[in-house]
Amino acid sequence: MSQWIAGIARGHNGGVCLLKDGEIVFAIEEERLSRKKYDGGPFASIVKILEYTDKLDYLVISHTQPDTSRVDFSGGDVYTGLAMKLKLIEDDNQVFMMDKWHHKMHASCAFYRSGFDSACAVIVDGAGTFIPMNINGQEEMTWELESIIKCSYPANFKTLYKHQGGRGPWPGTNIKDLAADREGESGDFELILDDSAGIVKAYEAVTQYCGWQPIEAGKTMGLFPYGKPNDEIPDIYTDRDGAKWKTTDRNFVIPTYPNGAIINTGRYGVLESDIEDGDDLTLLQNRRDMAYAVQTESQQMVLDLIRKAVKMSGEKNVVISGGYGLNCVANYWYLEQLKDEDINIYVEPISNDAGTAMGAAMLVHHVKTNSSVNRGMGESLYLGPVQEEEIGIVEAIVEKYNGVVTYNKTSKDAVDLIMNGNIVTLFQDRCENGPRALGNRSILFDPRTQDGKDYVNSVKHREYFRPFAGSILHEHAHEWFDMRGLEESPHMMYAMNCRPGVEEKIPAIIHVDGTCRIQTVKEHQNPVYYEMIKEFYDQTGVPILFNTSFNLGGEPLVETIDDAVRTLKDSDIEYLYIPHNGIIIEVKNS
Image 1 (tube, rainbow, N blue to C red):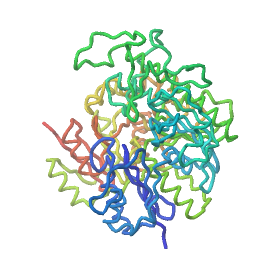
Image 2 (image 1 turned 120 degrees about the horizontal axis):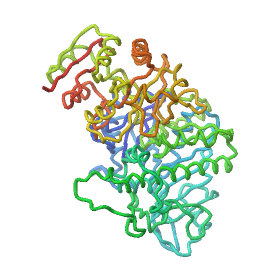
Image 3 (image 1 turned 90 degrees about the horizontal axis):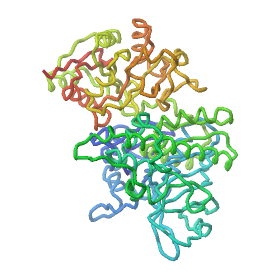
Image 4 (image 1 turned 180 degrees about the vertical axis):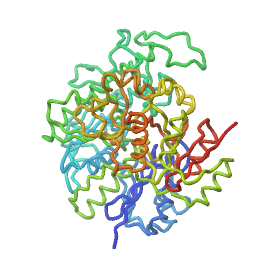
């Protein structure tokens, strides 16, 4: 009989990963179904399991905070309760709660997908597991910030180092004695405990300082190259109170655990302009310079952690996950800094909390089977439920939004529309897991267009400084970009320098610092998408398509055909290519 395991991530970026005999059947974030960005509480995702199986062997629940939600009358947590009501499980003996191991779930996801037989994991997160600790005779709440975890098969995850933060301060704290109080651990690891913001919380503080929600740190990364070194901004990460590690100064970056942090501008006299409600803070140079500071300083902090992990573990293989793993600027910078150090890096593309559902399911599979089979499942991210509808259903959806369908269309027809200056959306098969669009839910455009970035940002209702990605034929990637030793970049995890002369050829996708987040595409990875890029190359000599996620600003990636056609209706985008049906849909708003 087959073994079915469902992993559930409950916090922000909640979602479900379903395994059958250790293979991923589907993985999806709740936001794709609920249409609410960063949504948690993956109830719709749990119901989706019924499309594949009516019975689970195990339900594995990963979470970041104490759960106070209970099922009315019968009691129990709401996720186990829902699974029971759907008859997916019969009793609590089938449920594993991984609520104390948030960073280990990140590590599990990255390790099992990396293809390494053993590795050390570097996890850099905002606020992971809620960890109550006995500090100076009182119970205090602390949170995981950064961890180093040694990983090997079948299911060996040993914590070597952990930085925990809390609300503090705690004068006279005995760090050595506290290590043994860490619930769920053996205690024999290096523990740093303080009341600092940590690497990611400081990044979130700057994100808020720039006018966004803490979780929107990707915007800060996009703004950073508009900034420059500024002597009026103190070091964000610094030696503190004679300690042997760098951390944030609480007087400058004030953590508000568990969510976000605040920049104390008055403390150090960081100059503030006269700001009125509605002002675009990104136009202020001090915001740009703060983004520059936190990006350059934080990536140095993580580089130091990578080197520390190699030294502590004796491993040359390093896997990176947690929210900071999505920082494609830092990921590319590591390659240059480590080029002479014989260190192999795998950056997990599902580094956000959705990846903990996958990590939880994989871990239980290996524990229950004692399997040391290394599947190396990191190549494909097309893991969502299949969304190929019959033509009659598609036609009904198009009619609902007053669109028009043309039939017997090919990749060449879609590329011809792009060549004529149109934005064309591409919808096919299974949605990408993680935050990057990789040719199954993509908005495509001509990268040669001089004002293309401004135009598409306007159409998508995004900020002016937000950069776009490029999808390039794998065989041409090294000619156009400095890959820094990488053979490929299939998941858009690196913002790479373009070669001399390239920026003039594809100005729409080159950021102000001369970089582009690229996706290399091989034919077997995505045949239709490869065919489209190849057609564009044959017509233009440019082996790259402008690629951005198929959504509008503030919305999740589209999941269904209805989502896709509605997005056209709500924007100035007019064309949708669905290869499965061989159709192009046109929706006009005028």
